[in-house]
Amino acid sequence: MTGLTLDVRGGRGAPGYRGLDGADGKAGGCLWGSARRGHDGQAGGDGQSGGQGGRIRLEVPEDFPAERLQVLLQGGPGGEPGAGGQGGRAGKAKGCWLYRVAGAGGGRPGLAGQPGASGADGALELVRLTAPAEESVGALTRGAEESAE
Image 1 (tube, one colour):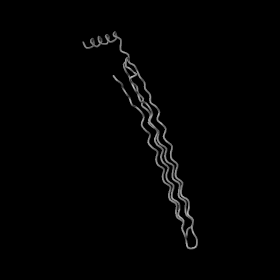
Image 2 (tube, helix red, strand yellow):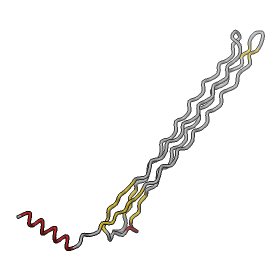
Image 3 (cartoon, rainbow, N blue to C red):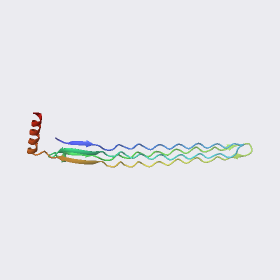
Image 4 (cartoon, one colour):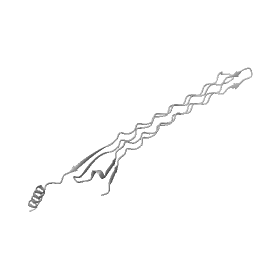
């Protein structure tokens, strides 16, 4: 045997959701007054945690060369953070007959989310099986022959 690789690494976490954009501001009017400011964008969602690495119980013969065994047990990387939503556009200024209505400011963009946590590493339990003694193998075969008669 040249080598054996067991790959049970955890999967990548899902990305966070993008934040919603803010609503646009309202333009001022000559009859109803001042303009309204744009609304702020929402924050992006956090990335999801990565998947946990696998747990393996491997039963091998007593003389199995464990140095030829390669096991990949790492937890998966966390998901990417979600982007923040864009701020709403500003309410526009307007010129009226006798006066001018000032515009309002735009909304602020939302904050980006946080990256997801990495998944936990897995575990390997290597169990070495011992061969039964010659006396017990002989007794088992004699018992089987006697019951067959």
